[in-house]
Image 1 (tube, rainbow, N blue to C red):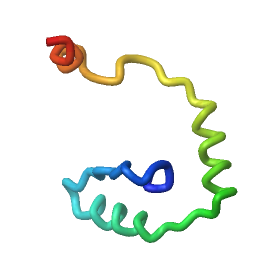
Image 2 (cartoon, one colour; image 1 turned 135 degrees about the vertical axis):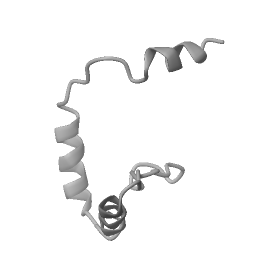
Image 3 (cartoon, rainbow, N blue to C red; image 1 turned 90 degrees about the vertical axis):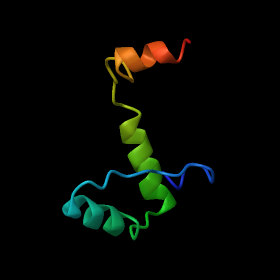
Image 4 (cartoon, one colour; image 1 turned 30 degrees about the vertical axis):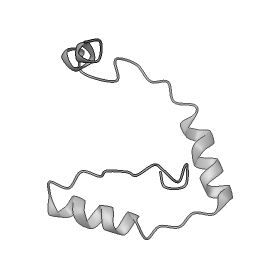
Length: 63
């Protein structure tokens, strides 16, 4: 996420110790531009189904 834009800040979930360790380890990961491009190309192939948010939350944005 940090590679996409300077103003994007990921907010990882950290309710469990193993997730904290996993997220801290991920912060050390460095990808080449080519690796990043390959990942983006694969992600572009995914078709997302369903609503992005819960229906009740989605209604609030229209208030």
